[in-house]
Length: 304
Ligand code: CP
Image (cartoon, rainbow, N blue to C red; front, side, top):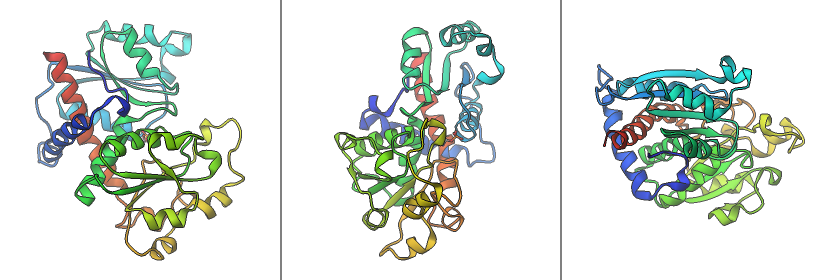
């Protein structure tokens, strides 16, 4: 059985194939009839053990536009609340003839664990602070769309790197695609040995922005912190927030990204988030085509 558990497990050629397939589906979903009949014989369960807006709706739309049958599961309203285990939950759902599972879970490695214990294709829709592979794919796809290519581009990931699955998956994807990557943020929110992943640390935001072609702005994930890693929101905003004045002071116009949800006025001001420099809603739009591509390619292996 094939899975998408993390970008770590992909080759560059896998990512290239996903992008080429997404190019086709992007054209499809811009037609008056946004659907193709490709996956009429596939049933997919979306299992969300953690909150989501973009990823959950994007997967559901991607599945429906491929004509798959879809069931949605939210842990908060399920028998997980009565003590049912993850493996029991998923095996019960699979016994209803489900072929593929999309799962978001708060525990790092939950997707890898599940893939070893159940007989279905698993797509990781975010596992704790570990990986969020489809987010990284749609991010690199959006860079490719805006700048023509990812190879050779300079990308800085700004913010709470320590708790961010988006950062880790982006680092893996950008490295595989030949981009140069820096991380920028409070040193308390940057993992100690991050250089071993092939990135450099730039603690000064202005220097980082002057270096890069693209800045991917991340949210501080207070929900993953037992203690506060930074003195205050006001200080964070002053040192690591992007605003229009700062962007206007740079030598060139850089591309601004954000995976969402945005904390407006903290890591990014509204005049930046809503500007032409920002491709935040393009990222969301591309998420549907990328997820269609991932599901289609995995389903083709189920059907073999
Ligand atoms: N980018 C992202 O994963 O957003 P959601 O948490 O809303 O799915």
